[in-house]
Image (cartoon, rainbow, N blue to C red):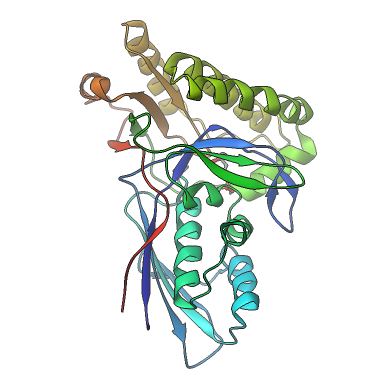
Length: 321
Ligand code: PMV
């Protein structure tokens, strides 16, 4: 086949990864739990560059001159496929790129899946996971749908804990600023690992946070899950803040948004929120409450857009010709 097209969705971590065990293999120093999101998606089209060894990558129709993010993954896969040619890769996102919405996770997961099919590699999940991690430590989570755990340690593994339909929560994404972040997660994590006085405590708290989140998920208890997810999220942002130089992805609009969300919660609606390496706020709620929550947030001057998603499925091939 000449071109393969794949799709993958971003995933939002409820128990977060911020810090690497090893920079070369890009492996996370801690375990994480995420949900894959359905309406936001990254699409990758890949074909062989039959004319040369050059890799040509366009992202949202723009030629990329810095291939740093995809090269480790491509090199790893090229070794397996014994490919001596370059690849022509066209990636696009239907949501803001590099704005704290996990576009690198979905982008890399879709690339890995597409490459695997283009070269007919039939790789085992473990190899797809390793190829994905090289591009983004959170990308393996986007290979899978539903609730996903990425276990760190000597034996890294990634698995689904719940199917998308097992607990059909809704995610409302409050976009407060869609500009690209000034500091990448990769860079930020290294700064935090080296300099934050809270980094060790952050690492040490991971096991307990994972346990608490796992039991809240198995009981489908949104309030217990929300409590630990918010604690974990703020702890990560404290690690960032106490880094040298200080890293801050939360702006004034994010804070106003959080205040309003807390107000909505005090009015009796079960929900929780999380924030990643960008100023957007993601609300997780029961599906039946989504319209009321969106109504309460509509027209707020600090929210430039409200996106809605459900729990989605994993990376997949959509067509090939
Ligand atoms: O995988 P990266 O390099 O995009 O880092 C993800 C970092 C966070 O989104 C802040 C946390 C997480 O676990 O997704």
